[in-house]
Image (tube, rainbow, N blue to C red; front, side, top):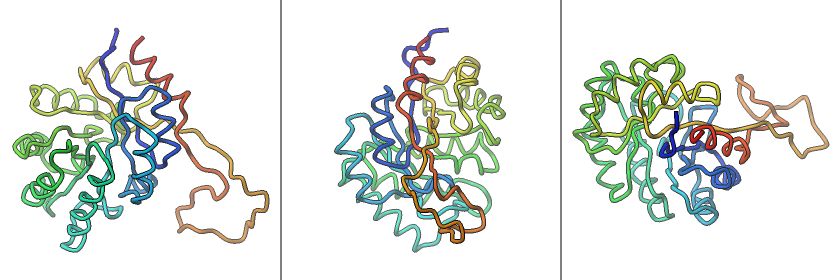
Amino acid sequence: MSTPDLSLEICIDSVAGAIAAQQGGAQRVELCANLLEGGTTPSAGTIALARQQINIGLQVIIRPRGGDFCYSDLEFSVMQYDIVQAKQLGANGIVIGMLLPDGAIDKARTAQLVAIARPLNVTFHRAFDMTRDPAQALEDLIELGIDRVLTSGQEDSALEGLDLITALVQQAKQRIIVMPGGGVTERNLKKIVSQSGVREIHMTARGEIDSQMTYRNANAFMGGTLRPPEFSRLETEANRVKALVDLAKA
């Protein structure tokens, strides 16, 4: 199967990741901070420098914290401010997600964020995977004029949620872009695209790089109980992005 028009969005958390994604041939990046928490709003400096360094699409996630997607009035105010900042710093799109306590889309406040974001494109992120009724949620997003929805099919990975993703694509009837994301790899990309018929896909392409620190204090740690490695980190790799792009076109 040839998929020359498949668009790859690479999830990144640094300016270096943005550069690597572009070098590898990605069409777009989603810029986040704190990927261990599923992604939160990146700093203004990170957005500005990423914009300076790349000319591909730059999506900025607007998420004030990790955890659930039911936000306080103060958090909602932060989100509104961050959208304005992202627009001023040159983002091409924003990525949002808000739910009501009962698991429905928070249509009223989502509409307010979309209005602030325009004319940028708007993606509704994997908050969608926490909705109680995905078919109704999709119709709500279409009504709101959302451009695309990122989903794993309400499962731990897009491969496990492939049946629902396929059903959502059929339901959407090109009224909204359904973009699979979550656990997409070189091994399962072809199957996900082939069965669902999607034209955009979201994935990471990171590898571990060692810290430059030669002195390493093993008695202190900067994080909480769930501890990522102190002296190594994951970074987007251009060669892996290129391999994914080549796979999509092969």
